[in-house]
Length: 209
Image 1 (cartoon, rainbow, N blue to C red):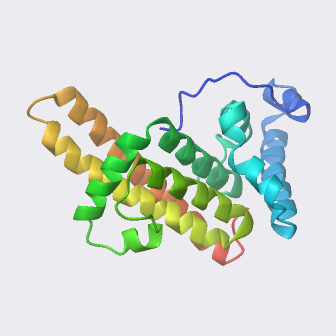
Image 2: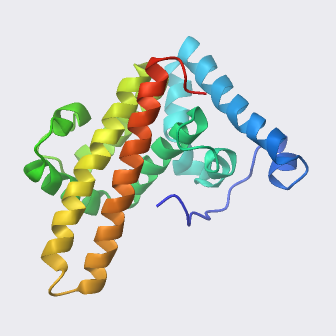
Image 3: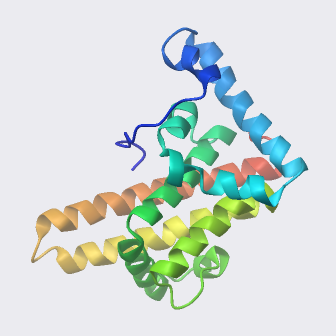
């Protein structure tokens, strides 16, 4: 789920040297973390609505490559790792809002935790509602409680993991390959949920860097 995105985009010039191997891994790691901290600190200090809108919709115009090059290799439990996963989830939702809302709705019907309340999606959750949820979560990173935004995303992933598992069970007898795909997707959602929940805990103790 965190690989396979190759939509062309122009990378920021300041990053080219690091990405193309001009800097050593330690320097690349430092730049990765510094860019995440600088971006988040600057925007949260002065959350201009137009700037926030551009950040939320950045991948709609430019694709995911620049963000992937910047942050996808960061530790899952780090600030750039958290930002990468939220942007990736938004992209996945927008690529398949029908399928994502279907698995989310199925998960909501079956899950026994408070995750649907934490995720905060409108009910019933169709394609439009799931797109709105993705934007709300990403926007919350820049304008709201950062930890709550991460927890909403983690709950979204847990719900989808349950939904994908249920759908996989439905498909197993008639289409084993699709069932396997859904099972893999459920496992990836579960992993991202754990990672984002861990980031939220670190943020609350000022330990997410």
